Figure 1: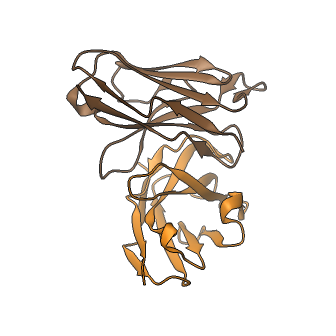
Figure 2: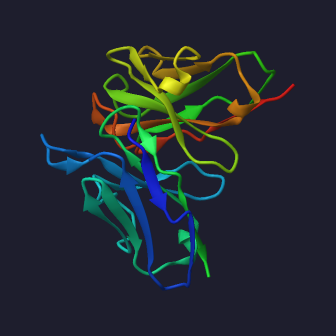
Length: 113
Length: 121
């Protein structure tokens, strides 16, 4: 199984400041046949199911604010919130779909400092 | 718009079984993989397994192999996840989810509302 490791477990950021979350996979999730990273980021607010933010490591879903961005390739990925807003308080997960079983990172809790 | 509506809260005894349903509407049912993901209280997300209805062959995480059965019926656009020999550690929210690419397990674009399964004597 591909192990997904997120860091940090939690972070507190002031409103308007940058938040950076890292995700590392135990093997590359870059698929050579389509040259795409099979890596997704989700946001989960309390009491709700996860919401897809970014697919293919860097493609923002429709309606997701542009303060959210994804980067990285191979085994190392980053989710950046460029200017934290109150509504961004949530837990963020990365997930690989390079192969089954689909696996998730342990989550990063983002709070307001 | 794709919607996934799950069955309601379940309270089960240890050793028993639970079967959770996921009714899909909007879009084509048969070609898109339905995944089942669970989340224990205060914990992270865990993929249980999935099925592409057209192929009707489920794929399970090894941890659950032998204890879970995932099925899907095109006639009713409904998927099911049955978990047997329940333990207290199985207490969790169980979600069904679906992606946007045909015939593959991908990002999970659409999620059901979740079904709370509580296992307690």
